[in-house]
Length: 588
Ligand code: ARG
Image (cartoon, rainbow, N blue to C red; front, side, top):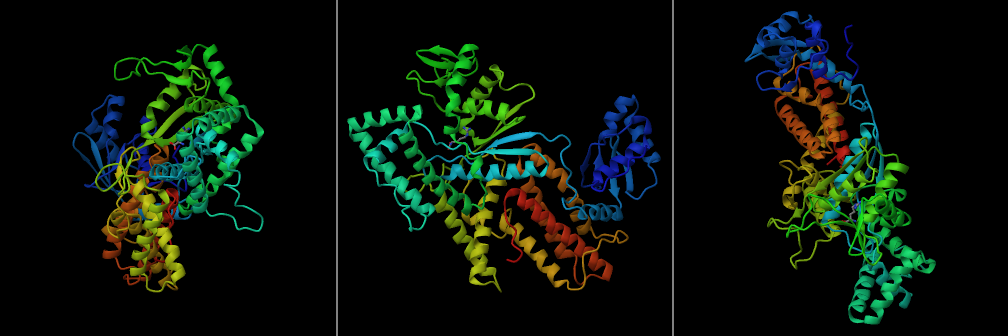
């Protein structure tokens, strides 16, 4: 049965169909196609196929060439080396394939065949604490991965595992009890506080209570007792704790808003959300023997996790004083995500410095039977943001850099770039573009190298118009939109009968790789692969634009066909950038 290419067939699929038809005895052939410099594609699959059919690869390749059905996909094919095929596709096939993709809202990106449920743990700041550059990464990478997964049809549940529990709350709450009016700003009639104000209130309280905690033994004792009340669920204590959480959320949302990242309140399930499960989690681990008592603490041991002296370092699920820590919470969260949310994949977008923690937590959950063969648990660990000197990013005074300061500076720098280029933009438009360009620049710099690597935070480079930056991509998009506006009567129409110039072919072949790139980036949790694709797309477009006049092309059909290529490039850039969480303004 001849396979009918679906609407969204890629050139790769069309070539595969043609090759398979040439050797019907082999079933569906996997030609192992890759883009090549010699021709459009090289097929290396004849070698494996010859082995399977017990034949000579060169002879098989020649037979395939011979048996190729007359069609309009492959224009030229030759056998090379031990049995490779160098394949050149017909210009018309490129245009026709792209036209089919252009007719699709999703640009021909198929849904995953067997979508599942992935719970993504991302954007997890800590209550009563300032957000820093590390939180930039778990927010930006997480946001893009969620968008990529959702686009492939995966069901995604976000979990923002904020640090909203722990001993420091005893100190904060006790201080507030003794200084009751410190957080009373939302008196009636008063305007709601801004994120900045909320954070400065929290900072002030944190500093004051810390100072008291360190200097006053009696306060320290009261603060410690307050932790016990909190964990026991004492109502007054919980109400005050809630005040800290609410105040922090005002601040978090202001930062997420600046970052242009949407967070839903129901997805914020912090450490406190698992409080009711902790004792049970520990009991189950102890009863099954997965965890054992050691010096009063409940511990899980691993053969391959040892300290510097060679002695085993356990995962502590319950401390000897009865308190539960980070591990107990994460183990309880796994139970919730697997059994209540029905996840088949758990993804954690968390700093690589927590890798040992997750390795031990996942292994413990496997031993306990909470993670089974059908459930994957993956940490998408990310590297450190470095300063220009290559050391972890710090202020001149050696303090951690506040995320907001960094974002404000990026927006300011972007404003200067936008202003310089802007011809007919109002002040209001300049401000809006500055935010889109500045935040885009920060996100793109973070997403364009593989997450695991450290990268240097260099604003000069990030807002540069040349090179691998979001601004470059945004300008490519805006430039196309301006051409499309100027086209007037002429519209984008695909003309498969037209021959293509080399720059058009290169652009067209790359456009056709969008679906495969999205699938790869989503499947590997690797937004940088999409970023690399988009950068190359913008570069190929620039070459096309330099070499092929669009509105002054030689015929009306050629104008339409080039407008078609422009339009599809713009839509691909727009969709691709959206998957990275970056805006593409219509005018810049
Ligand atoms: N709040 C933590 C931090 O700021 C990150 C939480 C990561 N998620 C988790 N399930 N442990 O470092």
